[in-house]
Image 1 (cartoon, rainbow, N blue to C red):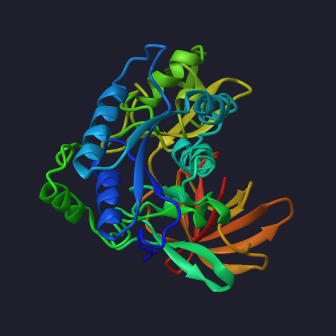
Image 2: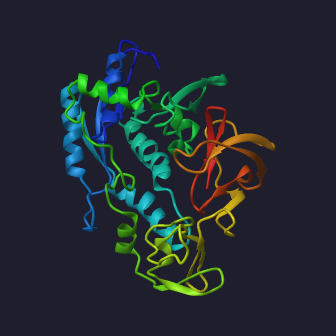
Image 3: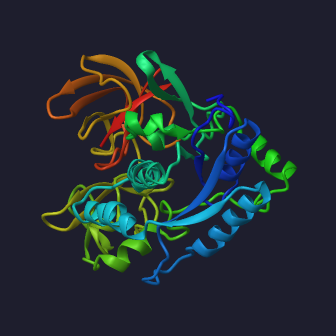
Length: 362
C-alpha cells in the first residue's frame, strides 16, 4: 500500500459517504501519492416516505464538497435497485422468518465491496477505498488479510467479517493507523466542509430511520400476547418481527419487582407469543454457551480443524475465547469459554485469530 501515482496504472475509487471518515481517507491517499477519484453510492432515497431522517441529498452535497476541497473528480453511482434486491429484501425476509439480520455486515460484502467494487473495476479503477477502521495485511502466497485497526474502540473489522479474498485484494483502508480523534483533527486541519459532521447512525445507507418504523412500513402488524415463562399474559405486542432476543426497551409492560426488568427471551411463532423473563443470568434462554454457525465465510484459508480462536458476537463486543468445531456444509459449532447474553439467530459472529479477522458466519 505504498505505491505512488507514478507507477499506479489505475486510480483508486474512494467511496465518499459524506462523512468525515471517508473524506479523510481520501485525503490520506492523496498525501501518499495515489491517484484517486471519488463516488457516492446512491442506495436509498426514502421514496416510500418512511418516518425518519434519510438525508441522502445532504450526504451527496457533503461528499461533493469534500471532493471539491480535495480537488478530485466526483460522481454519483446509482445502486438503488441492487440495494433493494440485496439488502432490503434480505432484511425484510429475515425479520419475517423470525431472525434478526445484520444489514451492516451484508452491506459491505454485497454493496461496497460487491456491486460498487464491480462497477469500479468495470470502469477502469484499481479498487475501492473506504473510511473503515481496519488494517490490510500481507500474507504468504500473495494473499491478503484484515487485522484490527490502531483504534480498537472504533475498530470496524466486525463489519467486514463476510468479505471474500478477492474483495479484500481490491480494498484500501487508509484509516488503519489513525484513532478517531486524529481523524477529526485532520479534517479540521484540511478545512474539510464536513469536519464537524456527526457520524451517521441507523440502518446501513438508509439514515436515521428506526428499524421498528422501517419494518412496520413494509410488514403488517400481527398483534399477540406477551407472556412470562409460566404462560401468564402481561401485555400485547404488535408483531414478533419487531422484537429481538435480549430486548428490554419498548416492551410496554411494567415489572412487578424492584430493580428488575423484563427482557425478551423467546419468540413462540406457533402461538404468536412474545415470551419475557427478568434480565438476569438465571433466566432460561437469555444466556448460552454454544451456538451453531451457518454460511461460514473465510477471508483467507478456512479453518478445517477443531481450534481455539476468538470471536465477537456483536460490534464492539470484547473478543471472546471460543472452541471452533467445523461441521459439514459451511457450518460450525461454537463453544464459548464463558456464557453469552442474547445471541439472536441471524446475527453475525466474527471470528479472529489474535488480531487477525479470519471470517464469520450467521
